[in-house]
Length: 298
Image (cartoon, rainbow, N blue to C red; front, side):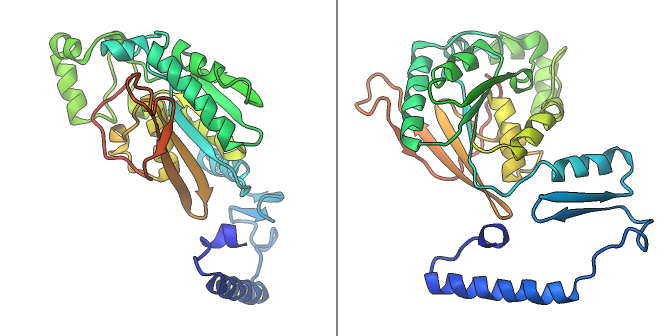
């Protein structure tokens, strides 16, 4: 009850007082509660969720939108879990300042994958499932963690936003070759679609089955790309769509999402892979939110 109704307060006495008060409220509501009746309320559309998803009663549901609501409610659960989000390690295209493509990890990116393995060894995550995009750089990052994973899956839906004719170009190249498109993108980054490519709006649509599957899973690590992870983080953190393309999603950073009542607890871990640093291979907790970012895809 305490994990689904309100976050536990700091003081132990206050916690038990609130818990008892909540139990009394439930008792009083149960005395007054009148369930919907499938005969008397036969013209209404409704869904009964019984015992937090143990069973469902679906009545008079019609149309696509109502069916999607039913599908969503049948996939969510209240069990404790964590969702981890990370971009792949630094790729050769990242080093060259080029977007998209399918380049392998750089030496620095491989070191991040190794550091990520050490993190999860210390985290002791039970039954960790890893979902990776089908790009080389994410597959290489995920493969490093294979010894700890209960299962690894490769999702086409987790591939980076398709930059179309701009794949493999630098931002300077795009400004020179496609100045009008660069201006359109600056005006409306969420709806702008790359020529022969995708928009953020398109990525959100293709991620729907991924998010639905995430809702029904336990502990999952997603190894994906900047634009894709922005969309997923915006969903769990309830960020507005106009701010979605500016969510800061730096390389060599791990985000831990812990679903709680009415939201998620978000924790960022920054990994140190600089060859010249004495803390190379270590990580630091850097808070619950990062400032907005202008960078787009990797």
